[in-house]
Image (cartoon, rainbow, N blue to C red; front, side, top):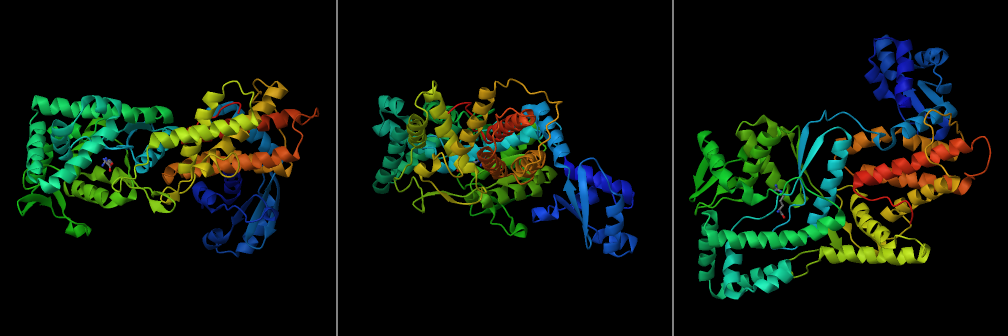
Length: 564
Ligand code: ARG
């Protein structure tokens, strides 16, 4: 039940069609303090429509508006302050949650339409960075949120598996490579070869020519080049997949940059047909001055295509293949300019659907306030970070609950969940510092805190022997601690919609934290299991909290262990 909607309807009945329901609904406010009630309605807009003093309108409406969920209305000047009938609202809200379970808060905005989400997208032969981790977990949460509001998300890992660097890798491998070393530790070994190539090429620039030749062979499909490239790609993917398995995040497509190799001519031809290509120092560019952007470099003087050329082909391919309603790119904010150029070129090509493409940028993860970078040899190996988080979770479980039967499984869920939650709890554009001990704490604004709170709710239900509570019961609670929870449960569909509108998983993470905090306050101040008439209502509340916390966590990509 949406009580704002019910109040809007009650007002609409009295006001009549001069003011549409939606306008009334949007005028409703949340009072700053509880003494002004639960919902407030300002009458200034009505005053304009009816040419009557707002105070007078408020006084008149205060006499006639009524609904079973309104306990009383206080008129304060031009405002109507609504006080809700807590018991009626509590029954309605808890029934909704119990009835709908994990589907509570589902919306139908998407109407089943497709939304490709470009996410994760690390580069072959290089370590996955913290930035790729962010893209992976933000992309995954957005996919869950999009599904919840009715879209069909398609998770695409646009691997960086093409480009001149593969010529360099092939040359380096043929000179200094060792197949066993690559099989043992693919990324570290390929990175070592790549770094060595660069340092040797400083003395022997002819290596660069060799690299170009090998990349050309690759582009021309020559078997030796292709099989080496394929092998590098497979070995790298194996290592990436360890991380994706740990995170339990999976993709619908691994079509990376190489996939578009044979689709690039078409892009260049289309640009030519539309007379958009200009030759500048033998390179082909699209001028974007009217967008206040640098020209987009489509083809180098040696004919090689670029990152943006492949993204143009990918965008067109996705529109054709998925006929998308929206197309998202979850990529760090340092690539904002690239995505502006990409959209601008597509707009120039006359593709109106470029308006439906959204770059979803995010901030940096720092350590000790400093940017993490591979170039300075400071590779933060993600798998190590994740394993460390699992280890810390293990320690804490060992202290708190040494008899837990499935400790290993729970430690995985808590350690990984902690890293994911920490990434998602702040506005995605914020930079944040990564201190692993902070991330895996059981107290404070952490994933484990939310998980722990839900496990506590589950343990109450276990103790009470609750199996399934009948959604049709009467669950009339009106104490202030329950009321805080009821309000947070009631607004859940709005929260889901806001997370979708803002492309912001942190809206969900914050809701989870608020709900967990409200529940812990409630728990500290009430005796849930005492045998009295209100006990079924209290258990209904506990079960509803457990369900919605679990759904919050699921949307974020975090597991909810029943015991921890
Ligand atoms: N591989 C790129 C990088 O690591 C990210 C690719 C993002 N997606 C895209 N369609 N451009 O920086």
